[in-house]
Length: 225
Image (cartoon, rainbow, N blue to C red):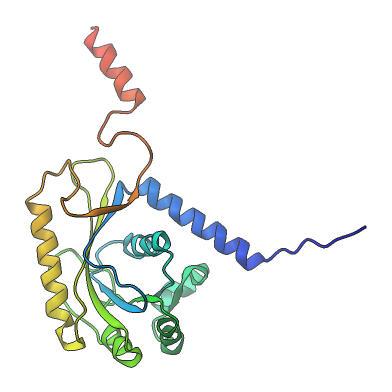
């Protein structure tokens, strides 16, 4: 009796990539925290963009929710990292695939600044996010996103989801959400997570801010000198 083992390479590669990225997030970040109303179903998310982690952190939130997801990336990035298509990346000019994703109920992330910017005020807002929302009828959601190193060894990702807005109101709404998030960070205890935010992703097990085994051993030795 013989049988055939069906092996789908694309499924295997997608699973491997998803597992690798989720491990990177858990090892590289102390956590991912979210505040605000998360859209149910189709939405164009328009986040600020100041960190390499931004796309990964948003993708992880979607994975946690079981929410279909796409993110627009530059052609240069997709040429360098074509495997990211397996987890939802599409070219910045591939508008028909983006619209199909929205019509199927996905979140589609469009970084309206168009590139990673230094932290601070929103410097520019391109028209792509508003156009996709208008063409698809999906909600347009400003998202303030900061990945910050505070009072712990690893950085923390914070997302503040705003209310749905019209295209012309996006620049002002995104700036307002960023100012609220920055004020919360400025007024907080840097050794504690921000109050009012839900922790979606935790880092490695263990107590935050506690010395590891080697540090405790050295501390014990120095106390005995």
